[in-house]
Length: 413
Image (cartoon, rainbow, N blue to C red):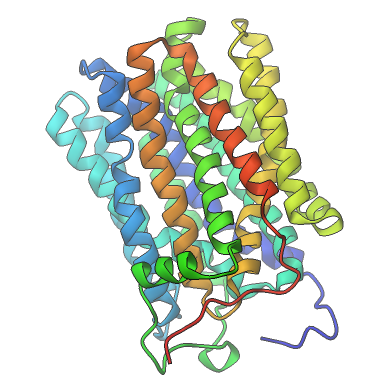
């Protein structure tokens, strides 16, 4: 790493190029999460079953993404260490994603297509996100992550708005166009992002790096509880949001009385404010600290979720989603940078994997638990479910001592 004696100048244009990676990833998931649940419901599946199917990717991710992240730390080819994983996973995900609407009337085939999409995405998400740690020093990461998430938010908005409109024209269209746009974005990353060379970064290539289980044991056994605390907070807030995202289009159809395409478009208000507040969230965290910024965001999300339980008007719901998008930006933009602060510089890929382990575990728990609760009560209770977990995240973050210096995980000698 370069010396921190003199702060490096932020290269904003290059940061936007790096952001195309997250743009491509973010094109896929909003279409996946908003349009697949109604397809499964049309096949007669209950909310519990739908919630379980939506966790398949996260069951895979819980183990595959940390392994890929750690392996990509030590993958050195003429293409780089992160790029080979992108070259493998992106085309695989695109092919299976396109197949989903064409087999939507057969439960077994749509399940296989969903699984193939999940495997492909898991192979390149962690390496793509690890560019944040590879290419930017600690003092730039909140601002860089703001740009990267702005690009992701733009991808999400394009997917929700365009995907909802295309879905009304024909169910396969959003999947075909989404896969194509994702591949174009990843090609931009492959062509224009310059990975640091082996002699420009600290590596663990000379020794075997610990795997997921070893990393988790290390975090659990540390007398300094910062690593465990931040991973637990991430788990709680992603349980809350993933549950809401998974069931919003079904909630919109059954409670607000709108079709799934319109429900997906409604989430565009949330994504739009995430875009607008992405870069400001990075600056706010730079000025006031990442912990304080995240706490404000969690507080705003909590208030919005409680309010959403009572709203039945579509226009008011749009306004609420927009406000919540701004608060979510404060949380989402700064979560990975604070994980890197806690984890240290030497194992960016490994800690990216731990971050996705926590978020994937949350994405497994959230839809399943929320689906069971909806089956036992009603669709509106999704708001209360999500609010409870945002509250748990808020109290967990209060206990975190924000690091002033990175806290490296020990590596075996």
